[in-house]
Figure 1 (tube, rainbow, N blue to C red):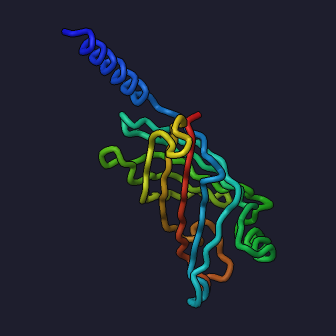
Figure 2: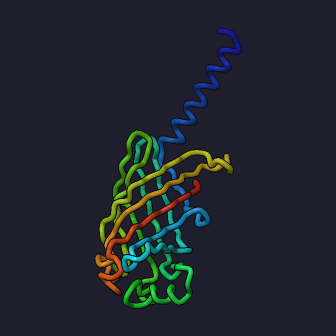
Figure 3: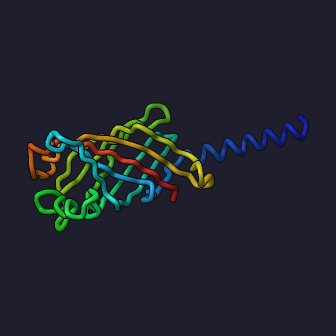
Length: 194
């Protein structure tokens, strides 16, 4: 073999070894709060569809792309609810809804995930609101993993996911049934390798 072919072969073997070792282990990611959001929407008296969100959350994601396993933990500051109205923010934090004085955090912790090929398609886990924990499955509508498009040297993951829950399951009873029991949840998540 010529020296040029040997160099190319050695480079290919080294490169493939790096890729295999990098993807064969779980990788931990810290959630980027600037590009992560949790929103909730519901039918309001049959007149409008209201959408609100939370401004503060933290969390981590573990992803092993080779083994097709993942784990997600998110903690949302319920006191950071943002409706666009300070008065309404206060009403939502009151005892008959989120009761943030006693339960300042909403948490989600995954217990299983489903992949189709290399694509994460669902995350099942436990959602805790007001100290009440219920199983919830998030349907992942978008999933990307790899070098960040702008910060190319940083490994990143991005995902969008949705779920439906009943607020009565979490003792959020105010104005039922005039204001809908069914709540649409949406998550937009970006995280960077730690």
